[in-house]
Image (tube, rainbow, N blue to C red; front, side):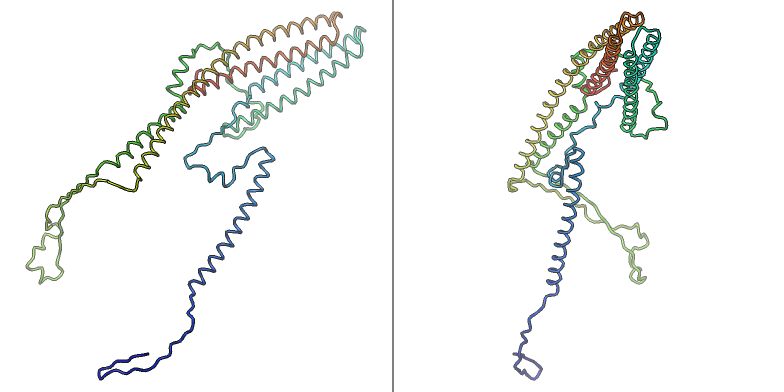
Length: 390
């Protein structure tokens, strides 16, 4: 019914309501937008899965593991990488020494070939000796080419680790540091004491432990009452734009004529009683973090102690190995000299001379490896201690 009122009275008329269903354009638009977002998300997911599968296949060919999206999401924001750049595989000076050792071996084999040809011409040797000398010389040339390539690769890797491009003619660049071999003078007790003071990993663990203890103290302070105090003084100034109203007021000091307000002081004390056990949860978490940080310090100290001890023993072992390798090298050179003299006088054979030449090459390689192993052991000990030792 429809009722119409006026000043004289009111009248009532019948009214037929329309039952046309109402439409909701906003709800329809939201459904369309949601459907479009769902299709777009599905398309993005397909592209991401395809890219992940492609990257996984490429990394598997190189022997590298792919973390993936789930692995990345499982990581915490404060995690640090536990992988390091491989440092022990780089040996530019060893590669240089290996190249010069190959050059020396090539020169000796040339002398051997000339001697074999001279003996063949005078009838003191056979063609077999000459051919054997030629084969030995060819093998030395191949070894020299391989050593030069290894030397170039090691130099390029060194420049990459330094973060600079390799200059022109980098193959001819010589290392200025000779890395002398000296007898170790440091003691184990001194190294352990120094590592306990300056090792960066141990200091970082101790700093994390201190931070966890301070965090626990801050969390426990939530049980204490909170005292708030506030004091203030205020004033205001005004200026009338109507000259009639301003005639009776003191507007000549504007804007410095302040009208002061009463001095106000507010103090409040809040005592936390119950917050749904949230404080207890935070205190428990802070205690767990403190205990974990304390154990991390202990574990890091034990790890550093074992590393320093092991690498200290390795330095002594490699230093003794250099002496043994040096004695073997001297003996191999004496053996080669005697074999050359016997071959020159017609008392020795080419096989004996070739064996002596191989013994010299092996002794030279062993000596180079021993020197490099010593310097590598010293560098590993410096890493465990946390500061240079030379």
